[in-house]
Structure formats: C-alpha cells, structure tokens
Image (tube, rainbow, N blue to C red; front, side, top):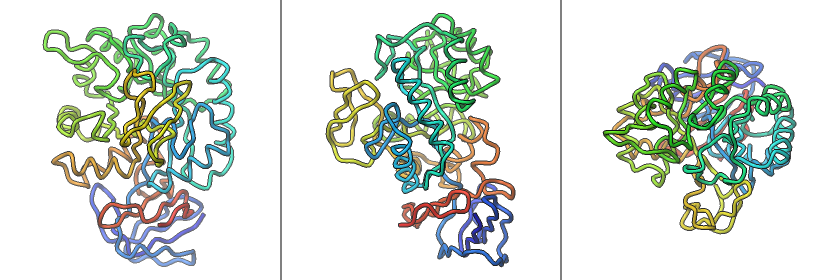
Amino acid sequence: MNLLLKNAQVYHDHRFEPADLLIRDGKIEAVDPDLSADVPVLDARGKKCLPGFLDVHTHGGCNVDVNAATPEDIRTLAAFFASHGTTGFLTSVLTDTEEQTSLAISRITRAMGEPTGGAQVLGIHLEGPFLSPDYKGAMPESLLRKGDAAWVRRCQQEAGGAIRYMTVAPEVEGVQDLIREFSGEFTIAIGHSGADYATAKQAVANGARACTHTFNGMRLFHQHQPAIMGAVLASPDVYCEAICDGRHLHPGTVEMLLRCKGLDRVVAITDSIQAAGLPDGNYKLGVNDVVVVNGDAQLANGGGRAGSTLTMDVALRNLKQFTSYTLEQVIPLLTENPADLIGLPDKGRLDPGKDGDFVLLDDDLQVAATVVGGEVVYQA
C-alpha cells in the first residue's frame, strides 16, 4: 500500500520532529519534511506519529480468547487491537490440552496467511506447558508437564515455524536442555517459576533472553535468596516484560524496573484476556473461568489474578504517568524493544526500509489513526 502522511510530529531517532512520511508498497521510503508524491494523503494535523505498538503477550480481547479463536475471531481481535494503536501482536496460547493447543496453532497460522484488516498477527507465543505448579497462576495444574523437546518440535512443525516466543520455568525437569535446543530458533522467556538464582542464571547462559511478566508469577527477591527475580534484574542482556496496568505492578515498581534494567531492556505487554474492551462480567481464559470486577480479572475459583484488561495505548499513558521518564523515553518499550526481542528488524522504528506501521496520537495520547503496511486500518 502507498500513503503519504503529512503534517505530523514524527518519532524518529528517539525524538519528535516535523516531517512527512512516505510509504510505498507497505515500506517506509523516506522521512522528510519536504516530500510530495502522487499517492493517497493522510493529514496528521500536527498529531504525534509513533511506530505501531507491538504486543508480544496477549491472550485476547473484544470477547475473543486466543485458545478458542477461529480465524474470523482473530480478525476481530486484530481490528480491536488496531483501534488501540497496536499494529502487530503475538497470539499467546495458554497451557491447554495437546488437542486444543494443536487446534489453536492451526487456526492462528491460517489467520496469519490472510489479511486481518487490522493489526498483523506476527506469530505464536506458547506460555507453557513446562511451568512450575507452585507459580502456575492461571495455568491448569493438571496440564503442566516436564520439558519435552519433541512436543515443541511437533508444535513448531504444525505452526510452519510461526512459534516466535515461549515461556518456560527453568527448574522444571528437561527445560534447560530445551532452552539450549531452541534458543537459536525462537525467543525463550523464563517465568511462572520458583527457580533459585543459580538455576535462573543457568537458563540465561543456555540462551533464555526474557522474563515473562516480571515480578508476577515467580519467586520473589530476598536478600539471601535473590531467586529468578534477582537473576533477571542482574542479567544485562535479558529483556523484562512488564504489565503496566497499575494492578500487576505498583507505579514505583515500574520505575524501579526501568532503573534496574534500562530503557532498552523493558517490554510493555498487556497479558490481556477476552474481557479487554468489555464490561465487567464472566469470561474465559483458556480452560479457566474468569470474573472481572472493576476491570480486574480474577480466576472464578479464587486462585488469583488471571491476565488483564489492559490495552497498549493505556499502557503508554500509564508509563508516562507512573514514571519520571518522558514520553520520548518510554515509547521504545512498546515499539523497538519488543521488535528486537522477537527478532523483527523491519518493525518498531520509523526508518526508511522499515514496515509502514504507525499510530497517530493526539495531545492526550489517544489513538487518532492506525496504519499497517501503509493501509489505514483505524481512524477515530
């Protein structure tokens, strides 16, 4: 798709500058304040132009649960995400039966091969099943298992290579070998874990590159036993996911995480469920029944929090509110950091040659328009 964005404040090289943005065949051709071209024009009217948000950890939204989603459901989800500034996302498959996991993979890969009319489906995130029963969160304990590289290989073959991300607990039997085998093929995160410091550091040495929803679903830091949490904070190259909804992390915790890890190693995620964008009520998260009250998703059996109702635009506004950092400083958490984490060099930045994915925000950081590959997929 071809498009000329005019009169925008374009986020480029970590600052905003007045510029026009020319997209040809879905790619950014130039960032220049004096461009003219015979293509459709979108007038930004002075709004901020950011790289499109990338959500590497979401289980759904708009009444769609990823584990049960049909290709049509995924298109509904993609349109919903686009309305909140997200231009690309990984579908996070919660631990489920082998049959349901296989079905979810099949449906997701079919959806990836078709236009969504919204955000792009970038691949699959397997959250489990090689996780700790003691830190299972919303994972059904009966379906957790030991590390099984052959199962992962079958899933990746069924997905046609679309698995880009996987969460594992490094203390579970067989998982360290699994990390060594697959870390060069897709990104591995550690989480839902009670691992001690040495075990978590060994996982990093074996190739784990991220921590799933840091501070949540893991053994917490103690000065005598720093555990998995201390290990990821002390590993400079490890990316840390953060759910910035004000429930999973106190604002002060978000500030601390950014101070510990640096602005280039934190990735904002939603961990959203099908209730995102909908009123309080009863919902599903994989096999789980979930009750949402005042926007807070909890397992119906009293087992604790079950994902979130967060969207990426709200996450950006929260980051600006929760921390002492400027807007320009926190934007990479939703853009270039997730792109770098899962190995998408054409995403996350508004440079010539990159994909023509961007979001327009007004002065209140509300989404005014979302563009994917040069196509306007949402306008307020």
